[in-house]
Length: 360
Ligand code: AMP
Image (cartoon, rainbow, N blue to C red; front, top):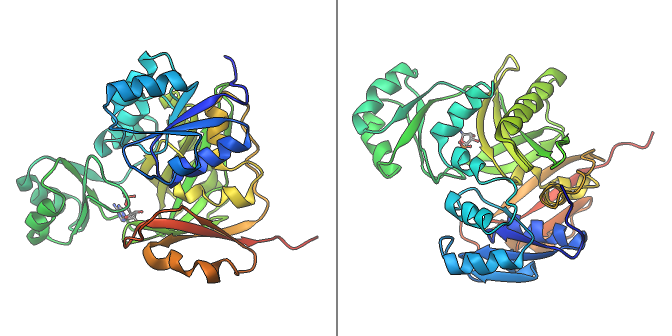
């Protein structure tokens, strides 16, 4: 098990803001980066040493990419599992391994996997046909959300139902694709854990995040989360159990719903750095992005300790146009992703409000 030395090249699949922040963190440790993305002029490519713009199944481009890197990671989970496998066949370590993509890309496999790992999930029914929705909705208590099994994120591929009359509309809204119907969870709070497993098996979890979503998209994250110590401990234990079962190397995030009695239901996982962990850039010695690079390179994990309380605010769509005012906010740190057009709901940047602890 040898660690990659500074000067080695880390390959990053995906060109979005997560890839950008990974590339910046890699540079801070002396690594070069090579971004592989199907998007021209991407946020990550513009801060990387090298970039390839090609389809994820372009074998010649993948072979050339593999030849130029020492290890590979990815910044989003919807890259084809075959892409990761082609890179493995080319002899390059892919961290985390492509196996976790198969679990994370399908909401049904993901839920079954959580249950096998001992992490509880809310009531749900697998749906393959429109006529299954009515009976499933009755079984789930009359209010539920229909989610496509594949390719859903940030509230996309989801439709809420409040009665059997909504079935046909919801089925059409998600594209009549294989889905799961989830009972509405009466949560009091949404929380997530961002944690890492190193190549040497060491584990490091950041403090729990308390997340507020609007229209299915993360709006803000506050740390510490207002949960009991027992709930925080349970969330981290479930996360660890899931990571161990995946034989994971790298950073992973799990989102949970907290119920009124403090119990947790596991919602979904992201086998990568996560929006709810962006605050670690400004409030920890080692951010989630550096942690991921350390894990991918086989380095010791960094200390996830937090230096202050924080709230991270996402800047969606036109919100980032206020950069001049945001740049003058006291005790806050602005991050912009360099995206060219501000479509509604698009993540353009974020800022972290730092709330220093009183000197004692
Ligand atoms: P997801 O893409 O599954 O994380 O869903 C996006 C957001 O929709 C979640 O963070 C919740 O705010 C809300 N949501 C999703 N599923 C449920 C559910 N079963 N019950 C209540 N709210 C939900």
